[in-house]
Length: 212
Image (cartoon, rainbow, N blue to C red; front, side, top):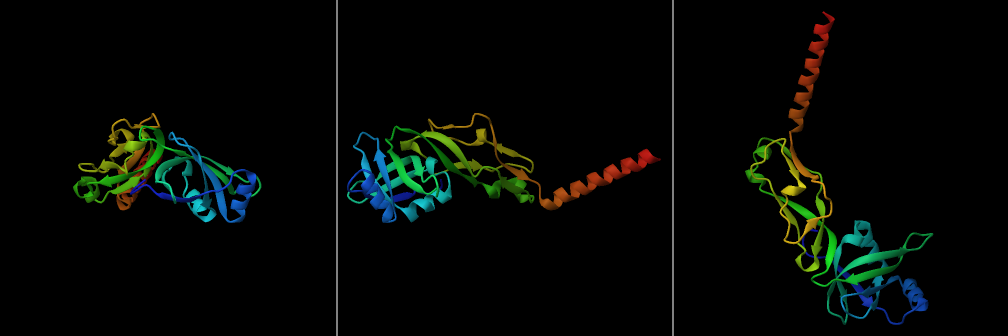
């Protein structure tokens, strides 16, 4: 989640019930409700095209949004459910939950890699292979980082960066318990090809020796 928290634009929905919801859908809107945070529920409408754009980006249920509704102050929300049409599989209703600063939330956070100029492995022609450009954290809403940072200084070809190598914000934790691989410094393709050829040559020599 690099950069600022994305905006989610909506409008307040007048009227409640199935009739108002059907009218909203006829107008190209998706009805929804915003609840929690010690406030009354707020019925809203989200433009269908806006919602679909966010859904197509993926991880909609684990993305923090800055909800903007005219006449109301901006609030941080996270989606708790998206109801879909059973035939067309298109969104028909959205439930959003307001977050207090102390609320615990699970989000995917973007990983930045810094220090390439001081990385011996890259200077020798190695390649940074990113396995996980994002990692999922459990963190309080008031302490959500824009990104996580991995420092590449001193890393050589063949070195592997694990989850335990990432400095996490205080109070945050990774949702996956095992120490998974985030990235590695792999050998240049030309060097890998050379090693493979040498390996094949060695096998042929061994086979010839065996035949003799």
